[in-house]
Length: 166
Image (cartoon, rainbow, N blue to C red; front, side, top):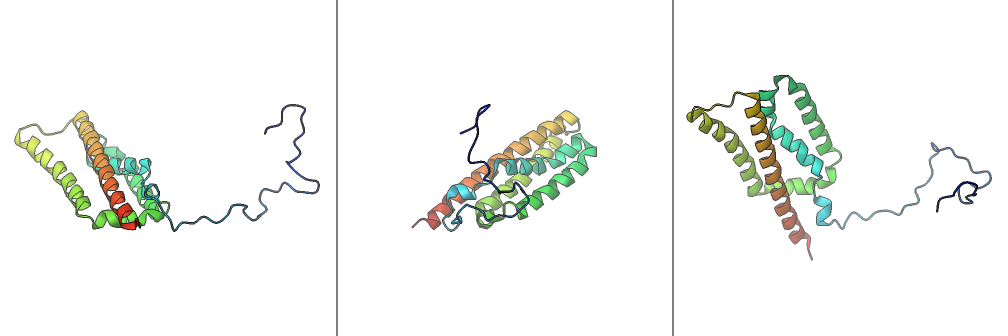
């Protein structure tokens, strides 16, 4: 309960207690049991899919904006750093994803889509050379990558949940 104007809050500081916030004190929270992970614990955060979408669209982003390569290099470095640090607890999901045939199919399908679409457009005499064309291709590749990664994550979590169920 908050104190209003003119009211005294009795539980803020006791006599003689100091307000040094840098002083280390034992944490009042109990230990967290991490042995019983649920499917939601394996789920990748939404922003991670954004990283992957941007990196999948990197070829066309560079086609539209050639001077954007330093930004893409920084995003790649941040993506790798975040993957190896903050998302360390999701390594079980990552291993399950890369072991699965479906994830490899997704990766191959994305490469085939990228190369095949450019070959098909070249064969029709409609090469993508404008900035707008590259931006549209970037959006399509990012959306396709995010959709396929979300689907792969869903199937991997379903498999992990079934494997860990009693």
